[in-house]
Image (cartoon, rainbow, N blue to C red):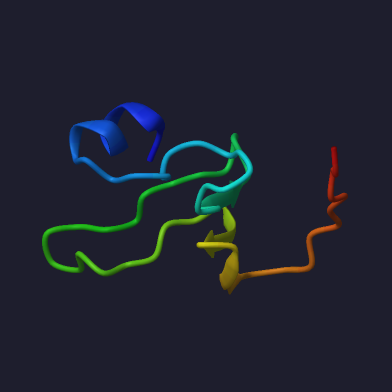
Length: 72
């Protein structure tokens, strides 16, 4: 979710990455993302999603992802 829909839903401190905001991040492979859900199987997991962080906490990590934390 970006800041525009977050704002339309009146979700404060969501949709942006900045100090004081909730860190919700999806890590994905741009050329590999594929929605596998169907009417018969709406809960099928998408492909290409490597990780999900909600409020800064890891919720899903499908593989080791080397990262570098940037501190200002």
